[in-house]
Image (tube, rainbow, N blue to C red; front, top):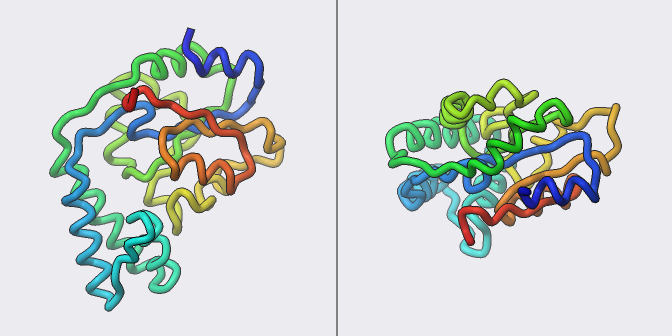
Length: 192
């Protein structure tokens, strides 16, 4: 039995929110290239990377100051990077199987820092795309996880916060769950 199934047996939920990269699928990407591209973009606005922040937190910081124009450029860089540099991927078949077997028991969402153009073909390949009520990718929100813009698109007045579970692998995911006041389930499949 998958640990998630065990967790849900004792902690019933109605809405499951999955992260993508490093949770459902591990994308083999040279992220240092992306970080270099984003650093140059930030510097083109006369700003600098704050070393005490993650790159995503730096992007959110600059987006707050500069706005939508900067965000759209980050999306373009990310889209191009993911398309040009994807060197393969590995799949968490346990979670893919879980989604296939339990999709009718939950509302299922994806909330990811990746672009839809990257995630949709892979979810389709594994025949689970159709089970996601919505895909909240980098392009759907002004600010990225761990900010709660994505959760605001998912939150439904029919459910209490206790009904939601965010399933992810990173501190961004955990922080997003905490800020959204929902439970978090850690997936260490690609790390263990």
